[in-house]
Structure formats: structure tokens, C-alpha cells
Amino acid sequence: MTTHALGDTGILTGRSLRHILRSPDTILTTAVTPVALMLLFVFVLGGAIDTGAGTASGTSPGTSYVDYLLPGILLVTIASGIAYTSYRLFLDLQGGIFERFQSMPVARSSVLWAHVLTSLAANLVSIAIVTGVALLLGFRSGASVGAWLAVAGILILFTLALTWVAVIAGLSAKSVDGASAFSYPLIFLPFVSSAFVPTASMPAPVAWFAENQPVTSIVDTIRALFAQQPVGGEIWVALGWLGGILVVAYALAIVVYRRRFR
Image 1: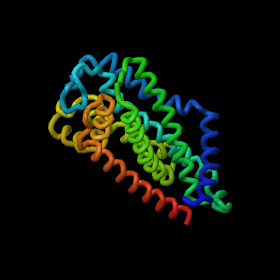
Image 2: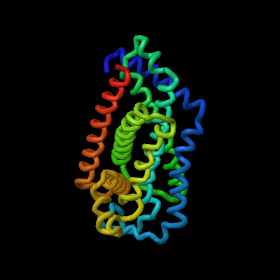
Image 3: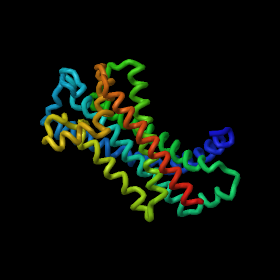
Image 4: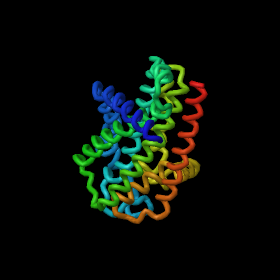
């Protein structure tokens, strides 16, 4: 982006962030569902789940279930949060904000990037809340600063990729419900992965899908980083998925945006 576009993006991002600060309940609501799931799995279901500690699940012997669970919960948190991005984008469309910006010397890309960066900021706050609760539940990691930064980078890339998917939904939706409904399959996807149980415990067809969908490689990479285990080739598979989704979603979002305001 040019200097002009960067300046416009900063101003519009500030506008979006002020809207969130006026209603912080959206961030709290985003964190409530993952926290509730974490409490359910740790205190109700976790004791009956064999995580296969010490195997390819990315854990080491003695790993607690909350340690195993947290990477998947963080992805659920992000998948829940991006629904609000699509919702806010749809409301701006219905309110005529985009048409108003079209008549002003505002870089077109800035309008979308403002929503994307706001989503990133809001999701990082939600992730911090969920991680804080996990620490209270007993989550512990001896990971180095570099490993924590790698986890943060993966989560940021995951947020950006899904947020651009949310932008497509927000631009294409015909109703408020439709603007956020797209996120339901994304929230469900971690449940059919290695996020909650090892894929080896699943029926063969389900296990095949779980092992070859993007969430499993992302979860396994984050889990290995937290557990100070070798990440192997999983990190490249995860980055390949994330990079591919981000590029395709961004390109489609720009096409949809240009067609709508041609």
C-alpha cells in the first residue's frame, strides 16, 4: 500500500476500533464460547480421553489435557471472532458508509484493511483472555521466547486468512444472519481434527479427513512448539495451508468488492 493508503487505513482502523471499545461485550462474547468449551472438556470429558501422550500427537509423557486442548481452543476462538468482522462489514454496507467513502479521496483498499486489522486486534485480545483462563486451569509450557513468537505468528496468519474469508461473506451476504452464518463450519472444523482427540481414535474415513484438513497440521505445530517438541514437516504443511487460504481469500475479496462497487 502507498503512504496515502496507509494513512487512510490507519484512520479507518481507528474508527472501527472505537466502535469495538464502545461495545467490548463483543470481545467478551467471542471468548465465552471457547472458555466454556475448555471448561467442559477439561473438567467433564478430559478424564475419559486418551490423548496418546508421547506419540505423534505432539505431546510428551505426563502432558495434561488442558495442554493438549489449548491449541485447538485458540483456533475456535479465532473462528468465533471473525463472525463479528463479517457482521460489522455488512452493517457498514447497509448503512451506506462504503458509498460515502467512494465519493471521498479515500483509498479503496483501506476500507477493507481497516476491518481486517480491527479483527486482528480484537482476536488477539480474545486469545489473551482464553490463554489466561487456560493458565488458571493448569496450562504450563516451557517453550522459549522464539517458540512463543512462532505460535503468535501462526495465530496471526490464521486470523488474517479467516478474516479475509469473513470479508467475502460480509460483502456477499443478503442478511445479518447470513453475514455471520458462514463461520459455523469453521468453528466446527477443529472438532474433526487432532484438536480434541488423536486422529488415530477416529473411524478410518473420518481420520483420513482429519489428518488431511488444515486445522490438524496447525494444531499439531502449535502443540509441538508449546511442548518443546520437534515440529517436523507439520509446520510447512500448516504454513502452506495458511498462505494458500490467505492469498486466495484476499484475491476473491478484492474481486467481490470491485464488482459490487464497479
